Structure formats: C-alpha cells, structure tokens
Length: 118
Image (tube, rainbow, N blue to C red; front, side, top):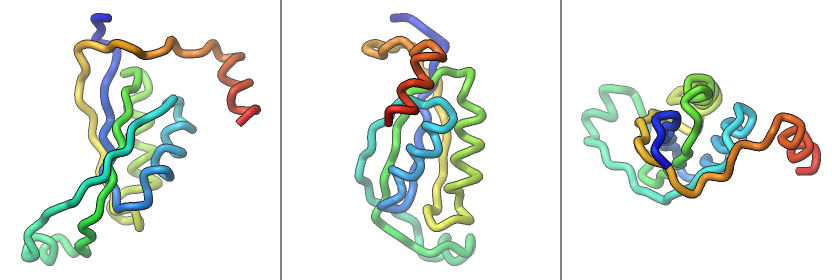
C-alpha cells in the first residue's frame, strides 16, 4: 500500500524500559511495536561532557504510527522516558513511504471496547 500517512518512531532506552515506553505510546493511540535488544556505544569523554552515566544495554522500540499522532506520541515519550528519567531515552521519527500488513485502525467504539477488555 502506497502511503505518506505513516512514520516510524524509534525509542532507544536503557534495557528494561521498552515496555514502559510502549505503555505510554498506547495511551496516545499506538497499537503495537517491536522491541530490539541493542548495545549503546559512546566515548567516555563525551559521556562525561554531557553528564550522563554509561549504560551499555539498550532496547529499541519501533512503532509504525499514523502521522497525525506522531507529535503527541513523541512528546509523551519524552515527558515520561526522556534523558532526565531512569530510562535515559531518546526518540525520533522517520517518514515511511510504503506500508504493508497493517490492520486498519479500529473504529472509536471498538477501540474503547479493546481498552476495557485488556
């Protein structure tokens, strides 16, 4: 399906926090994501300059979202999981030119029923 209506949001957080990020994203209308395990690398002098603690084990949460909710998802992730928090998260989005395999968004009534049943 050709579309310019979607973006992929990447949230890179310390290990153990990706599920928390997904919970924040779900509250903003994101339906799902994929978590990858990763290892961060940064020069020690750069870490000292920015005043951050090195935590090598990372998780990357990838979520394909409708462009209309991108900004509120990014803002919520930053507010709840940003660099000033224990997750030490960074989030960014990239445009998606093609999407295949996404289920259509549920109607508002169906979405509310899904939330109530979970």
